[in-house]
Length: 480
Image 1 (cartoon, rainbow, N blue to C red):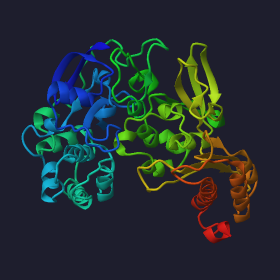
Image 2 (image 1 turned 180 degrees about the horizontal axis):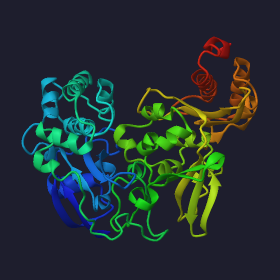
Image 3 (image 1 turned 30 degrees about the horizontal axis):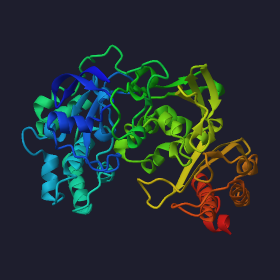
Image 4 (image 1 turned 60 degrees about the vertical axis):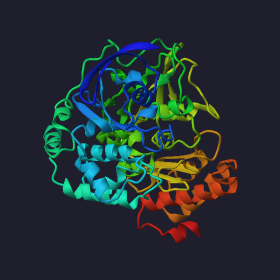
């Protein structure tokens, strides 16, 4: 439906009456003539339509800029925010990022080049390491058919070297980037604050049942590429009351609460999450691409009810509970009880997931997935394992989850029971591997046969053991 919207586009204030459900990609190309943002896959996979989205950070204390696939971004989400397209970056001519791509012959037909330039510009702007590995990882979500990826990687590495001394403080870093032409100075001057939204409720929260709830849009817009006019989406992913990570209570009973608007990137970056599952951040690169992680929400990943959702497998192993709301009111439910059948959940027809609750006490944690590609792929099988060790070195509170081995994500109770109370020895894990294979009933499909999935599940449990207890036993002992 039409809604008053106020936002900045390439530094300039825009006030319009727009269809809030319309993908930003279509509005940019059809209504503004900014055709540098390209339409490629229309599923968020190719990165050709990337733009930089300015929004409030998780703490609500400042501004963060994230890469966003505009094919999955609703126009209504721009209210009170800011957007920068490739035209905004290049208003004064080619930037250092664009010149690096040119020098390394990283553009041929040029279709993907604007998205690559946006992704690398974000790499220079964002917090985090400036090394070559981070530079190359920043364009993982950008596909190119012409040049191959070696030239793009060379350009990324050159930029990481040329800009290695950037200040850590965001305002100072932004000023340094503006001085070197990565962001035009006039544009940079607008990037540290956001305009007032036109709506008193920029989250767009109509009554439950009156509209589709949308988190990051990374699933919804894949299924609804051209939304019918008249929708009034509830933008759960930008509701400030639903985007939080906080610790509740203290001691052994402390709980980590994550609001429905928490993104995948928020989750892995959270110090509280990292304290509850030490080392969990190492698995972030196994989940989607940088621009999808910046927008996709944990609650949306759960509600989509994929049998092989990576975040769902992780949260199951972390003993997550859900806070659900609907016509019948609010209630708590164990995540494992949320899935009733393939793509069927315990949500009321008009309900949403409001929050996820995790025990805050630290636990050893491991995640594994098997897919055709190491990165940027849907798993054939995934699994997570968490546990604690008691004073005698025995495993306690063991939780094993698995996806891709049934119609819903599963807790493997029998495999966990085999390990519970035992020392981390090869024999215990071999028995757990057998129990896990006997506990599941996968189907055969394009990603693998049923027998393949069972065998892979056992191998992934062995990988958990090797990751969590390095040096305790060898792969040969586990797979004997």
